[in-house]
Length: 306
Picture 1 (cartoon, helix red, strand yellow):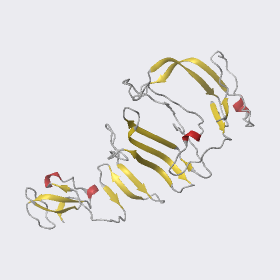
Picture 2 (picture 1 turned 180 degrees about the vertical axis):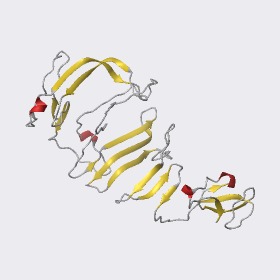
Picture 3 (picture 1 turned 60 degrees about the vertical axis):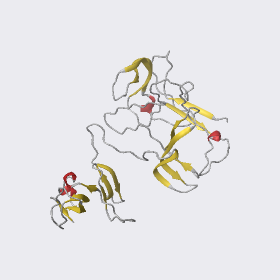
Picture 4 (picture 1 turned 30 degrees about the horizontal axis):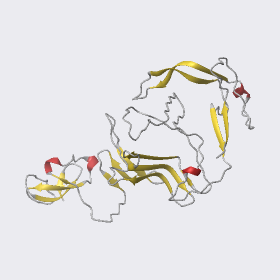
């Protein structure tokens, strides 16, 4: 399939050119302000640093040098170091809701990295297709900024397919993730879609957890158009819903009395199921050590049999 690719390198010099020069004005009619034309652009292939070890956030060098394009000065319009523009005039089979046609697709840029004979290889070590490292003192920063549009069909900001395979490379368990989905042809618009494609009993469609000393006040918050939280799962895993409608009986979590969570103002209105009561006396404090069970309620200060 033939494509027309246009690469614009704004003012970048080759490794043999060490002097500064103003950026070139793009040939397709774009205009830049005079201040932008005078902006200094240099290319230096010998700046130390190279790839940066970002595990977890060190600044050590992994290679002796890297190729660098430096932009400086004031600007009144965006300066792009490199643009790959692909105009596709070819026609191929149209994908459908249940059928993708990657053999007829066009790719502006493809990164392929594989271990030799990966399905049987014992080579170890991390492999990454692209590493993005940005540091910004003030202003907006985005690792990936995308603007995706389609007239009629499927559009997504990101789509991925990950799997584990057998010795022949066939998937044993697989997960497909799509972000920012707008499907004007088949219907539906979703912020996030996670689909299990292969394997039975996959662990979880979504995992939210605390790591190290960091904690979430809430694992999930859902707000309406007026920014009022209508559903929340807090950092302890407790769920709170405004105007909740149940479609089946509510099953309270069971606790021995000695293991009931702390009852305080934050837990006001919580209910649980005590499973080792000695006696059942409503509105009385629960006493454990027996074989009786009953619901218990947190009044903001203490648990009572309810």
